Image: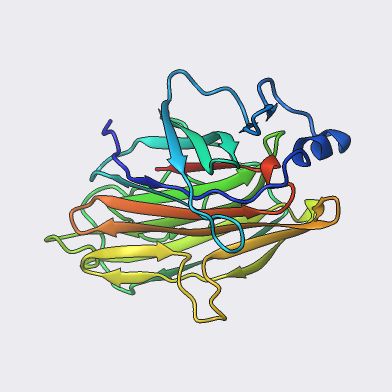
Length: 284
């Protein structure tokens, strides 16, 4: 098992102190032991795992709140699954604590009542000489009609205090690199998103931008020419006592010509009850 290396940047967001957790208790949202807001204003989502790598990330504020970015990479043939779990958040200092854990079993997402996604191929033919690879994430929009020597995925989501996946986004690339070129054989880029529509969540916008180059095959929810919007955003107008709550992702994964891959996830949670939402991810 190859250990992934990564560079981490994170930004925090504005918070109405003292509003979040009392509201959650009033609406019957139970908290696991260790959850709550301390006297110093730190929001705790759970006890850090002693077996995890603990990451403390510093934020930079934006005009609408704050945006977070996490990046990582994996070596060719790396089949490890790495999970990231936000364990605490300090709105005063714009710091977030995240556990990084390597595991052989993928996270099982909570079933969502709405979904969206798409995929696109570079259109080339050919079958690799090795067995097809399948990334360890739930993505119904991946290509299952052709075989690929390399397949990797980044999955990120927000969950509530009872563990429900409220909004979730996956990006996946399948490719057959040869002679140092990522797009020399058949390649496929796809994305898939789910959200709990029955709980009031809906999608505001999404912008899928695949690319197929010799230097990299990329699945990205990033760029757009639509009024400056990019990535994918979800909204809920009833989650927080009839005030607006939004979650946003800008995620991508790229398969390279040498068989390695790299990924990044940008995210943002905005609203008076954003402290009830913890961020999670899985790279595989």
